[in-house]
Image (cartoon, rainbow over all chains, first blue to last red; front, top):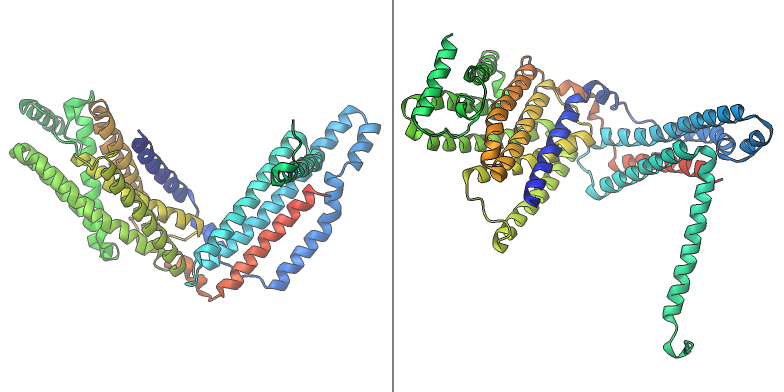
Length: 186
Length: 290
């Protein structure tokens, strides 16, 4: 049974990959072949993006505006505020995705010609990229379920939980490390 | 009219011989096994042979068959096989089964050449990606073969006892190699010309459907037989359609990567990519933490 399933999976995987290749446009691939920008150009782009985003992100994900709207505005305005903030957060997430995707696109478009390709470096980059994408998907899920204001709260809660867990683990390991004669007899 | 008469003649012939033919790429066999008009399957067979002849005539006339020798050898071998099988079926039926399986394994061998040709054409111009793909393929093949040998020694999965199982296993190995190629072509966004893309997608779909149908045939036996004789010729006709469309005009895709020949230091490429990913991660963290 496992043999049948694995062979069917191989066949389906091949068919799926080929259909994806068939749909891929060759024109978009050649646009990836533009020469790399200089390091300064990339750094300048990063700094300008960072400068305009730092303040905006605090407004977008911070509780100040939302607390004000919650106290002073009617329900309809609250709904409108939430939906607009959600849109802004989605746009920001889209920018992050594009940045990661562009970095990888430029890399693969140029690295495929290099005969000094190192498998482990390539694998590490691919894993890094997948981690960023996975994080983006997680944030997107939180945004659509709870809205942008909940994101930082949830992260704070998760941090708190992780701290508690670390403290608990440390306590357990300390208890295990204690010599048997120092333990209290029941 | 003539087609219908010939199809009925085939049906009568197979009834008279009292058994069904071995399934093949051709669809004139096993006609009574399914509830379809014989003329429909016969038309698909004729369509297949016509498309194969069209491909061969076009390649010979324009002389670009030399670019893809294994592929055209494969198409020619299938064409010769189909026509000879028809003649054997009508005149010397007792040789049909052995001829069919010999032919099938010859086309399987030439098929390995087609896979190699696709690898060479797709990754030949990209030494880095090509080397990675070869290493991964070697690793995958060693794993598959080791697993097969260990299973056979343990007795958990015996060696293939029928021609169908053997063909299925060999096709599955080809499928694994094509998966490796497809993954690398997708990940490294390898530009492909229309011709090689058509050959790759068509041959890959043929291998994929063959593995699927042979697996189900070996597992379910007679139950799947009726579906198989219907599926196999239609899948093959679809693949021939893809090949004809892709190979109608010559285009090898070299112009797609002509700009990419600028030499760049690999380590600096990795650094730039890492920097980009680090920036993306920093933006994410800024949004998530005050």
